[in-house]
Image (tube, rainbow, N blue to C red; front, side, top):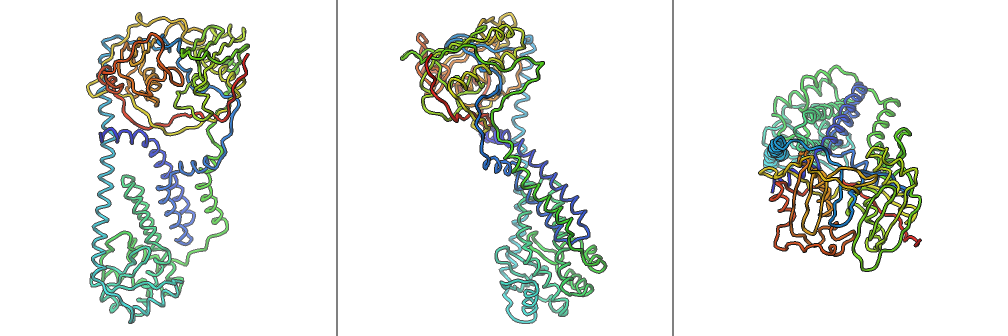
Length: 630
């Protein structure tokens, strides 16, 4: 069970995670290049860039794109173009409906390939669970290390005593006034040998080690306290906590840890610059840091802003020798603004300008005609009480009996019933009989066109008919929906390879009459196929289950198969007809004692249906009208 859910999570999230990682890494690289441009300016500017790169790991661009799509207005369409392969045309319920199949391979090779595919599937199926387990172990390890350090710091705070008077408290009040701090910072005197540091985010306190004041003169004491006050003013503990979260989630990314070191380095450098700018002598300030480091140990927790962070030797050299940093010029300010706008507004604008919608298809002139309309079309209400339905394409003609508008849409746009939503209730209940004749010029050209172009042309004519006679307007989108993955079961597939000579010939398999193809016979609770590919089987199961079924078996052959199960309520829309209804007259009742379709697929075919989520194209009916009789 855990393996199934982990595999589903991996299938749904792995591509998005990969996109997010390379986008965040690219932003980090841009931030690094920009800091080189600002190397002679204040450390605060570089620190802000590194912090923005850290926050980017928590904010995927896809979220900003979704914001743009949310505020955009989807535009309706009048005529829509083909959006996929032609829907599997049914001749009549219980009769063959076909689709082109590839030539089958020899039976002995197929059996070996099926076994190899089963082994590969088991290996691949276990990979997501293993990767997620490794990530979870790393995530928990990072949290445990920080938790232990936090406990140590909390224990030190519990043993500390408030210090409200005296030389240290008075020096702290003066540093607060110089730093513009309105709320007084609580000073805690700790017997533990730790460095002075700010602890906490909402109500920060200054942890001051007992005995350190005796080693510092007044000027050195005020310099150290000024450094800590600037940590509070800049809210460095909050930024450190944010990056701690980034390190916990993306612990496997080496540049995340490198980014953490850059943040600490520029954070301490920014505080050093402020202390020197406010009047502390460079030598006095450098001596105060050295004496503090001699007295204390390193800070026990990353989110405690202390005085001894970053490379100590480099800091001493910089404090003693470097001139005051330059203010940002107008050009560099403009550069930072442009980068910020591009990072935030760019994905939002992309979402605004790229709303999924059905658009007219353009094909090079040399490819042949891809859009046309029926020359003559008759649409009449279906005969009351007659639940039979069929769709037949013949050379030059299209006939449909007992079809709902919704079912016609699924045929015209090669989608399943669950992918169409919206519209009044009658689109899924009222039935129509349609007879249409193709123009003679199109009928003559049909047999000369490749199969794909025949499919596109047939879909285009039916789409045009829906737009003209039903005033149909649609909007296309993409939505993550519950789905099933068709995979090889644990014990391998139980499939029989079809022989080329056994593949039936059909006369009404699609526009133009394709000479050979697979055959699928369907009855309530039973499916018989000859020369069927598993991608075609997945399409049939998708219609039966009302969910998208993805072929993830890796098996490419064509098979003869029989599947028997007990249909559940609401299952088998193809059997009961478009929009539901009873099975066709003469069809035997399903075996009520048989297995479910999920059990039947596993026991009879050696395959398995696993629940997952997958993006699916959806069509929303914005407008539709009942046609006038003719």
